[in-house]
Length: 190
Image (cartoon, rainbow, N blue to C red):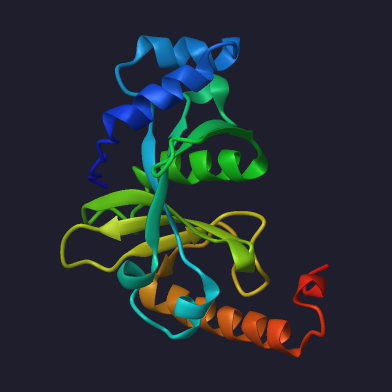
């Protein structure tokens, strides 16, 4: 699968490098590379636009950049928000899952025929995070939900964008219905 690696802004890279100071395990790989390894653009969609069944490109907004380390640091990622350069360092199963999907993509026959830009898509209100292989040609986008995923999605399964949006639309509608029916919306999902 040919991929396009996006070039994060210089100030974002500087913030990621700065965050690594004092973290011996992470600092080594950041100090040896010009750009932190595996930059991935992170996009977020809210429920309401998703429930209107619009194109993913129209509703997902870029919010941050995520940098993951090589296999020695699997499970660790540095994320830098674009607007204020706020930095978060995360070690979690989502980071490990994202790393797994991105590494396997180069050998995946379902992705071999097209050029993709790997992205991360989050729908926070639905507790959904997916790797989004954004087609750079006439091909269809492919999305791979990470574990844990809402019941509507099978973690690590490859979905074409149409099938993914069908499931996401239904999930968004059900979730919004729950919020509107609850006396106190903070109770939904508790």
